[in-house]
Image (tube, rainbow, N blue to C red; front, side, top):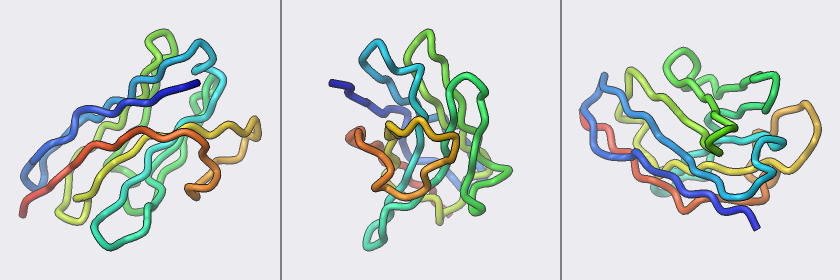
Length: 126
């Protein structure tokens, strides 16, 4: 059973940066697509970014494109989300998740993902 554990969240001023990490257990980590989602209070969980293993192809939500970068280190079973130029509207709990589909299409809805971490809080002050 794969387990995902996020870290790296915190409080940062607008314009600042944070790097989130997601550590995955299990020997088959490298074959799966991985994604990041976020959920602000009173809002639905929304897609942030995803990455395909091997090719390194990535996908981003329009709201974070050009500011966030998703990457992975398969040797270490880690997925990262580098967040730059943070805005107050980026405040949310951030979750990493595993997409079990072998399709080359990116899943951008929560139901496409079968395993989730516990989340890490990111708060951006104005």
